[in-house]
Amino acid sequence: MKARINVNFDNLIHKLVCLYAFFIPFERVLKVFFSIDTILKPYRIVAILIILSFGLKLFFRWNSNKEIKEDIFLYLLFVYGLIITLFRMLTAKFYLGYLLNDLFQMGLYLAIFIVIRHINLNVKKVFTILKYLTVGIVLNSIYVFYSYYFLFHIRRQGGFMDNPNYLALSLVIAIVLLIMRRSEFKGTFRKILWTILVFFLGYVFTITGSRTGFVLLSVCFLIMFLFFSKKQKWAIFLIFIGLFTFFQIDSLSTYNNSSSLILVRRLKNKANTEDVRIPIWKGTIRAANASNFLGLGVGQFKGRFKEFYKEENNSQIRRMVERDYFFSPHSDYLAILVIYGLPGLIFYILFLALTGRKILYQVRSAIDIDQKTYYQYSLLILTIVVIFGITSESFNSALFWILLSICSTSEVLQVENENEELIQIEE
Figure 1 (cartoon, rainbow, N blue to C red):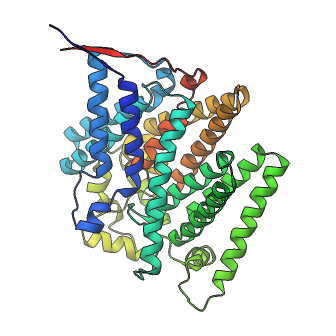
Figure 2 (figure 1 turned 90 degrees about the horizontal axis):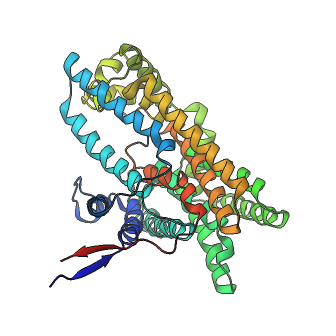
Figure 3 (figure 1 turned 90 degrees about the vertical axis):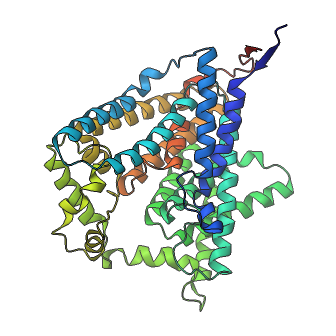
């Protein structure tokens, strides 16, 4: 006798994606608590489960994404990257270890992007994913606050995340989401909780000392002003004034390493510090030119770093060269240029442009408040991704890829598909 089991793979995968989003801020949690440095981070284990579940779904029934044409330039970027990598493997000194490491990470994150773009999602489900991500960010922020004030780690903080800039990026995402979804916090207690969360995350944001994060947050506030009513604009203005006043009071503290001063000092001393980005960017141009702007191939900039920076006088870069190590290009666009060449950079810019055009259209044509809020938030996320990529390399960041997948997921949200398909498995 055969038994049939009804499995809703979309619901299963959605729950796993929520768990994946929650674990993204805990990238270094095993290293911090147990001194375990492994490639199998918690979120990567969940990512593998997501891919296996999606593979099972495809085994029983394939559902194509009608938006695939809008992602085609992103996929062409990686197709070209593999072609130029194979070419470099045959024609130049090649570093296989760096290739395998980057292929593992890139393949994993791109696979998650594809999964999210090929499952049934509605506005409610997407915001659920973002809520799980925000909870993870808040918990990481609590650890950062504890580490700074109670463990006396008086320096720029990243918490469980890879570096302070990624922490700042996550905090901008969380703060903007809380502001955009403030209407969900009804009742006195929830409003008080909302206020505490916004101010707490804003305060932890200063501990990161991220100048790029400061620009992101400022741009997001300006864009939100365009969206909001007059009453809402006053609320945002008061929040900004409150945060500014709080930081000023804190800066009067006799404690010279006060958290707000980390960000303030870095903003004031920008012109007086030796910024490593400029010489790194010059080196990436030299590297891109050495490949005739066709690309060095995946992982090869790391392997050949010394070749392009051996004459560099910057002290930080010199130390890296002496240790036979490397810096990242510190820019998504320059990283793509040096690794994937000019064709890859053109593909990526076309993808961003098409995604931006689609989101702007959806903002204008949204049929209800929830959809309009989502599309506005998508526009903010895309803006954040574009600006953050100018001064940081994030292609090997799980946070970057989940943000990219969420902000580019819009057409499927036109219809709230509550009657999701069940797949029958016979035993």
